[in-house]
Image (cartoon, rainbow, N blue to C red; front, side, top):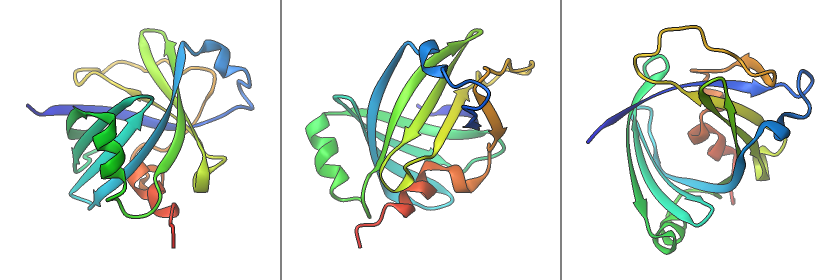
Amino acid sequence: MAKYERERKFLLDEDKCADWRRLAVGHVRIEQGYLSRRKESTVRVRIAGEQGWLTVKGITSGDTREEYEYEVPVADARRIMNMCEGLPLEKERWIVPWEGMTWEVDIFGGQNSGLKLCEVELPLAFDGDLSMPPFVGEEVTGDVRYYNSALVSKCSNS
């Protein structure tokens, strides 16, 4: 069954809030690779901690897109990762609750080292004002340069 994901993405602004990590309730190391990075759809494999996932995402319209996500054994996810083009994307994801919403702060490693993004997934029916945590900087929702599928293109093994 399809799920629709509605998400907004921002740069992390540590000048406004250098100690954002104290607000976090957990974190996990993530590796992900892409089997397909077409504009119309992406297919990725992700290893988050000791869990594996296959995800198919449709075209983005504004801040919403169709998403199908399936848990797979981590051993299978590792083998599928070897089928992906280039090196996997590496990041550490921090979970930060803020005024009823769950924010994810991604600190990238590897070829994207130094990039720090934060995002929040909104309920589809959400139409209120979003309360911004102190660490949120410039909004980059819809900027394809910050899509993970675009960031993985910087991770080349050639």
